Image (cartoon, rainbow, N blue to C red; front, side, top):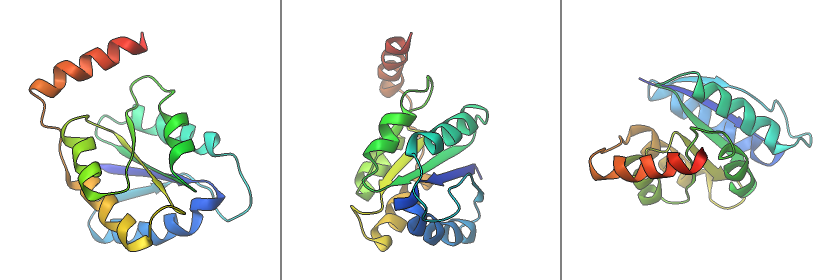
Length: 146
């Protein structure tokens, strides 16, 4: 199973701590890259940690949590090779993997309930990239980065 790199800002701390045992129970190796409490921090610092870890691990995937998930997704997508998707439903999480080969999921702790976040993150982690016609589109996206 792929290694999961998880991080959050202060707004996402409680959800991060809630998700870690569920992911471990499903057999994932989870590496927590911070933050360690609810003291105010800057989300780009934690998006950077996860993005860099995922870029160094071909099989790894990232999970980023902030209040809405928007800031984390913007910051993570600044890294060439990161495809971070803000997901609020299981369908979005599955399509992010199946069609977009997203390697980071972003969720908003203030935007969805913990139980929904569990299902959304689990769906992201268990879904696979379909390749085929979707690869051509991802190649075009990658070309935009250069």
